[in-house]
Length: 167
Image (cartoon, rainbow, N blue to C red; front, side):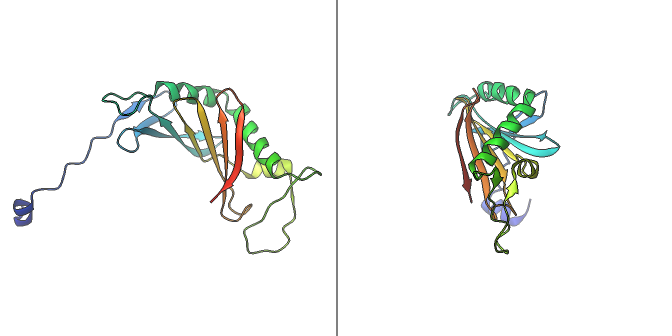
């Protein structure tokens, strides 16, 4: 033990992370147990999944409610992925079916992009699921809307609540 450790005490021991093993990925308590985080492949891209705990504060938190919603999403990935990408396209589409984009901010007069090309260009990189069944999808829009991201909020029933740009 060093002189300084004797004088000031040793540093605080690191907190042991809690891990929940799921059939699709492992979830680790991300911030002292108010949410758990895992990473899955969502259409060949790494996607962070954040699950709210069922009750906070709690001595033995569970994520059963948000985990059930995650399972529903993951098992219906094709449908949900298409739904959120269609929503994003519709939010920025003109009357001719072309998606108005800004580009990377370095170019003038960026031409609009066909809807299907836009849908192929974007990918979900984070999904937050609350314990009441609300879902937030985050899609990076770098190069399309300068350095912004598309944020889509939905209910687990499939109802889209909002679609916006953030950042």
